[in-house]
Amino acid sequence: MEENLKKEIVQHITKNLLDIQILRLIDKQPTWGYKIKKQIESFSGLKIRHGTLYPLLRKLENKGLITSQKQQLGKRTRKIYTTTEKGKLYIKMCYKMLVKQMQDKM
Picture 1 (cartoon, helix red, strand yellow):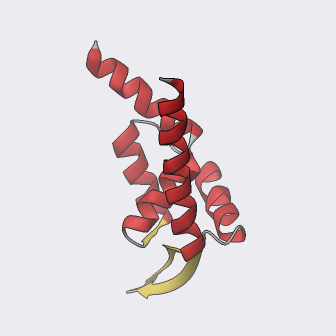
Picture 2 (spheres, rainbow, N blue to C red):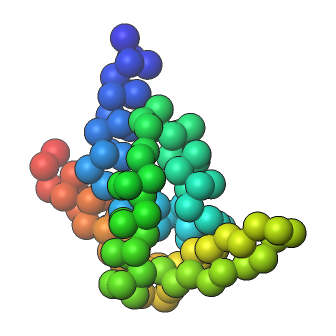
């Protein structure tokens, strides 16, 4: 029962804070879209559609929270995403606000 509750909470957080989860993953290590998709699916158990992920990555880039750079890996070209300083600050502020809000509610 406890394991099911944990899974439900993780899925809820992932669905509602997907942009923060993506920023957090990119901040840990610059990465590409498909790898982000697989990491989120592995962590949360949710299936993320390409039609959800890539527009969200573009939105984060347009806001200046991430940057992208194409890299050639053999015959394949990948767009590698990196967190900007603004993105790093955004992550810190989100976590501070979430913790504060949780403390205020208790």
